Image (tube, rainbow, N blue to C red; front, side, top):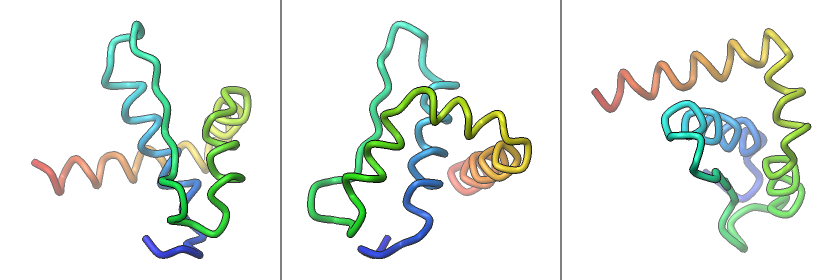
Length: 79
């Protein structure tokens, strides 16, 4: 995306959820923005690395729906 993308956290959350759902539990999932690629890199990485925040986000039915649709649309594109 671009350095000021407002969707960076949502994109990262979708990637994290897809990996968590796809990989066996023995794998540790870490999703981070590459250094220097986003204006809010540290804040987004902190949010994506916080398990409680991720769980709280996924308890929000609307946000969970957005994540599920994002993952489903991504699967349509790759398949």
